[in-house]
Image (cartoon, rainbow, N blue to C red; front, top):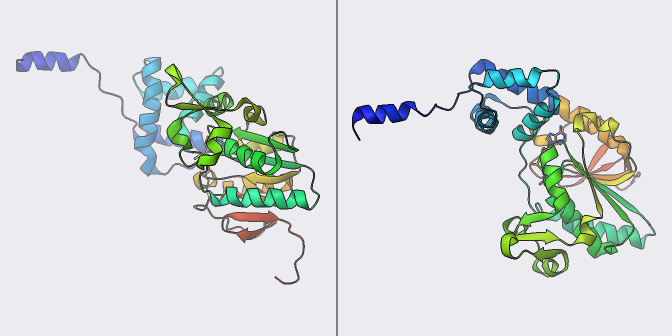
Length: 291
Ligand SMILES: C[S@@+](CC[C@H](N)C(=O)[O-])C[C@H]1O[C@@H](n2cnc3c(N)ncnc32)[C@H](O)[C@@H]1O
């Protein structure tokens, strides 16, 4: 190809728009005020690559054009789409397995001591692997039709829709102990090969819905024995963490538990939380004179 021909060919492709500093600040402020997600300047390339997919779909030439779309009074659906694109949803079955070993033991102990009903919430459930893992553990401990209730929510509407189907690539389930596979996963065939589907009895035990943790007061349920709040505090600054936790603690029964990720910390001393084990807290635990 001659140099002229190569230049002509090059000119027929538009370079992807870049996110300038002012635009980055707009989207950074957007995701912080909508979801509490605190994106440092080091995340600029990430924001650019996640949103550029949407720019291409809408055939927009700049991030400022997209920003104007988000600002329109009828832009609510697009704002939700941007939140979906900007939230990080990594998760898999039996992630941080200590929590599930503890849950199995705890559920059995509570039942032995006469507790009839267990109510659990996976409060940033992403695509649902955490909630299905909890459901498997409860099914093992208390029976698949046992007296337990499981809620699972996320701000991202795309991931909860995915979770409700209960179909996953096999790799996401590879940390599941082998003896549980037969009982709870159905292997896909033909166009579903390489995927697994949760058994329908388990799918119907989980109530998936959308909830922004900045507005958890709009969720009417309370009296939870355990809330899983794992790998989401990491995206919040200290102020946001405090607000989110201050709203969640009253939803947990006294003596109930809050589980966070091993990578996260709760520094605030005013919350009614006492650390019981690594990344496991109790809300207003009963007085223990030996402590
Ligand atoms: C990394 S995933 C964690 C999934 C799962 N809990 C785990 O530990 O594997 C973090 C999830 O938090 C959700 N998230 C972020 N900000 C949120 C908010 N303000 N309200 C509710 N969910 C939020 C994201 O959409 C994402 O699905």
